Image (cartoon, rainbow, N blue to C red; front, top):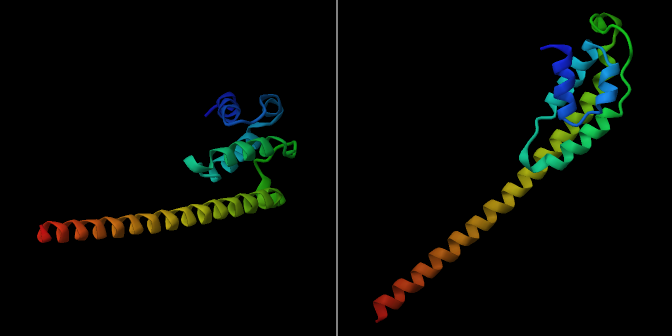
Length: 127
């Protein structure tokens, strides 16, 4: 993927296009990888928009990052990666809580339906 296409994709994801122009290809790839780690879901759309705005404010090191691992440069991005993992875990926890509530409501609805059917059968038998 070309550098211009990377910048265009990140711009459409909510990053500031002016800041993206100042980044080199290696920096754009790192930002794209962080964006992909976010794993967007429909229920967290507003969270992702807010995260994209926050990420567009992050200052990235200037220079060649092609050899970042040998210079320990990957450690620079580790705190952001941990933050994204924590946010993902929080989203998953909220989703699990919503699913539990939905299952409880479905179970109660099924119990009410079964009780109503039983009552209707008793009424039919008694008629």
